[in-house]
Image (tube, rainbow, N blue to C red; front, side, top):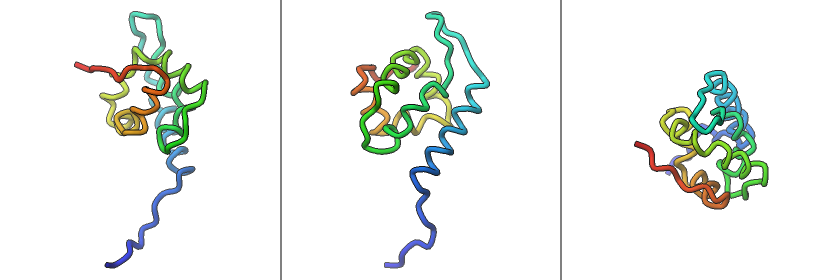
Length: 104
């Protein structure tokens, strides 16, 4: 079986790419009824846990709870969906006590 000559991206590169996407998306903020400013960059502290088996930090959980009303919007965003719907993304929400959203 031939080995792939394309190396896998490093976790550091994946974190940098996701952070860049989050920063770009944060420019397009929306307000929800609970007066939470939806800003995906607020979840940047969750990137290590959402891209590995690392446990989420206290800051990550705090921000995940704060951004809970915004999660459906993030899931509907094709740039963010894979992080939130992944097994690790779901694990982070579960560990942080944030129910996985039921988006309509």
